[in-house]
Image (cartoon, rainbow, N blue to C red):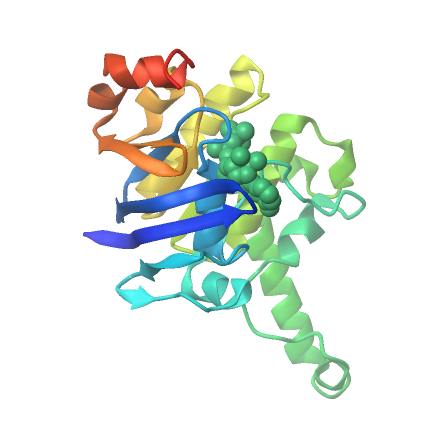
Length: 253
Ligand SMILES: Nc1ncnc2c1ncn2[C@@H]1O[C@H](COP(=O)(O)OP(=O)(O)OP(=O)(O)O)[C@@H](O)[C@H]1O
Ligand SMILES: [Mg+2]
């Protein structure tokens, strides 16, 4: 069943057509990889889905509901969360706090509640800390909980960025190049995490450049070129398509 429908979405920046009549669907509970040459529009697709840019034309539906015009925050509440190519962590905060601030849940930290209902506040805070720790365990960095985020390796920061979007409880996760720049072992970790998230019932849309990784994680592949979906299909069909290969490696313009 489709959880996301992107229909005829276009977006231009001055003379640059970042998205051009872009249409595709994402099936629930699957991993869909977005591939395509640099500048193909992959991040722009994430930006229109998450409300970071407003398309010039077209419609986007999440779980059957039209989400055009909704704020970024409302989209997160509905269940759409993303990571960024440049991560955007709170570098000077602890690893645990980075997750705590993203946790969905009851508000217990306003001053009146904290003063007049201290036991309630402390119970909510304890519960939140436990949930944040569980998420750090899920992504494999619980041992770093009290370290400052800036102290972590790049691979660990990428895992933290995923713990943060899991904290929102979103069902659709958009990961922008989660494996880029990772060492071989960190890369295997990330692939295993993506498999676990899928098993947990998440739907994932993942920008991925490495075709070997695409083959390991994707149920479905979207090939973007010049802001348009040139092809959508099973990983083998897309990766072994010679014409698409030539476009990907820049021989056809
Ligand atoms: N905010 C913006 N202002 C101006 N141009 C933009 C903006 N965002 C994207 N573009 C342009 O739109 C096109 C698509 O960019 P986008 O970042 O979506 O590509 P991409 O497929 O994610 O590329 P990469 O693989 O390099 O990350 C590019 O030509 C880019 O320069
Ligand atoms: Mg990009």
